[in-house]
Amino acid sequence: MSRPIDSSDQSDLRVVHDRAGLQEALRAPSSRPRAVVMTMGALHEGHAALVRHARELVGPAGQVVVTIFVNPTQFGPTEDLERYPRTLDSDVDLCRASGADVVFAPATDVVYPDGDLVVTIDPGPLATQYEGVARPTHFRGVLSVVAKFLGFTTPDYAVFGEKDYQQLTLIRTMVRDLNIDVEVVGAPTVRDGDHLALSSRNKYLTAQAREVALRIPAAISAGQAAAVHGAAAVVAATEQTLTAPGAGVEITVEYVAVTDVLMGPAPIRGEGRLIVTAIVDGTRLLDNAAISLGMDSTATITDDLTGRA
Image (tube, rainbow, N blue to C red; front, side, top):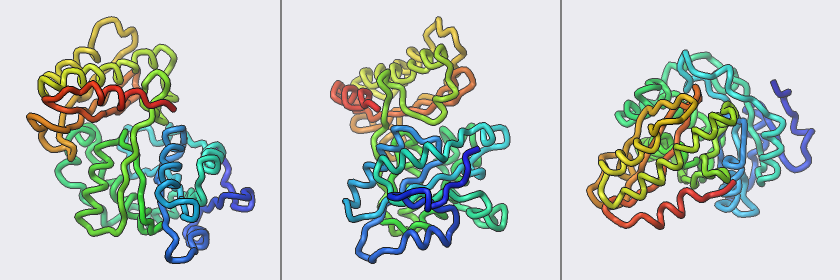
């Protein structure tokens, strides 16, 4: 496990581990805009892109805060809480290089000083679908900790990646419904050179498993190409690519779905979202992309699946 880092270790970045240190680090003129990027650590270029996006939002005089916290309340009893990678030293280096001003990396008892929460955020009916089927308590934990960190950091902007599209949608809904004074900003998914969406869990993949995982972006491209024929054609094309014989490594498709941009029912014609989750050799991978149902989607394929780290 990485050692705690004291802010005295850094000349250009404050690293704090408790709320008092955070409040000290956040002291600034009231006119100074602030953005927060919430992470669970094990940071990669996808997270760096979020930090850079946050910097663009607040400008050179603004303040960018990155939170690093492996939140236990969003893991189920059989999930990979203990296995989840913890790499604080390298995470801090990435934050510094990407333009962050403050890293808040609290221990669990700082975030949950009284143990389990008595009051939590009810994420609503969307949380029972898609990811919520396999992870029924996940989004309650996510929204509750996001609400806490919004309270800790009081940002003008909160930047989240579109890769976790259901999470982004639910956070936007929570902020709207609870009148939380923050603008939630979605940043595009960052992909490696082979088009696999960047994820901290990619570290679990063997070379052979990664080759199989490349079926996911390929399947999304196939689904986008079929979008002119409607949602059912998108699902069929996506599933056909994912389940083609000869994988060599076990791949289990959890779901393929087409929704509107708010994750409601797919429109007959118009903008929507294709979401995919598959388990490759025991590693659960999420991906999604914009689609244009009933319209030529060639431009969408090019724009969405050629992002590079």
